[in-house]
Figure 1 (cartoon, rainbow, N blue to C red):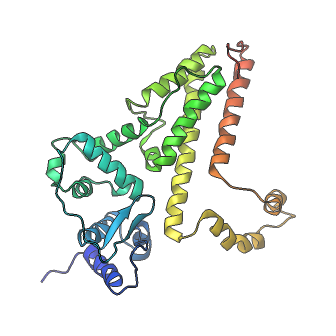
Figure 2: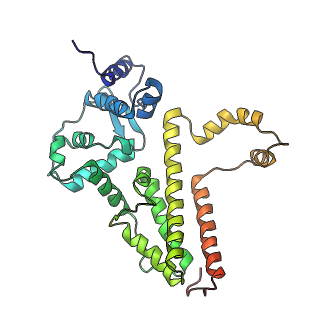
Length: 309
């Protein structure tokens, strides 16, 4: 008799904890990252573990919370596949999974299971996982809206574009992983924002080099801060501690290392305190980038465009 695959053995152990009540209904199930860290297996194996538990009806996905233990009185929903299968339904299912569990958990098999259809049925509408994630990113970008008419003034226009991207990445942090700064993809719903940015910079009198550098730095700031938020979400899932909890937990260790004589700057910040709010940090960085663009305009001797501010 062949030995059971590692993912099934791990799934059996977690299932035993659930059935014995050591993992209570509504409690967070071990995340894929926790399984990787504690069991020493690959992410693909950890993903299979969660899939096996889901197939047994022991866990479920709750938006905003991830994978939790299913209440015992509930039974898994029937895989009926109600409604006509379409690319739009497949993309929407992928977005729901990514929002709740992360991009790594979006597989063709997982999406098919969520829709109650066979994996092969998806391929009649979406050619590959790569195409699926491309469509997912484009779909969430459709949530952003450029104001009509646009705001007066170059600064307000660039702010608006950056804030719209930031809002999308706040709702769908995984989307930041799909946007590249060096190999930009032609997402149809993102192109209007690129045009909005480039047109604004061109109207300011900048040449192509300045336009590209300014746009990439602005978008890179939004994307990179979104990745910081995503990493913090993963850290909170892995440790069970918020950033504030972690700071309190490690504060004494940091204070033992930091010396006022050798680290006066760090010691000053620790003594005074700082509200490390990512939205605040994002806005600070955005405004300093816009200050830099304005300084570059003045250094080149370009006039202030109409509609200042």
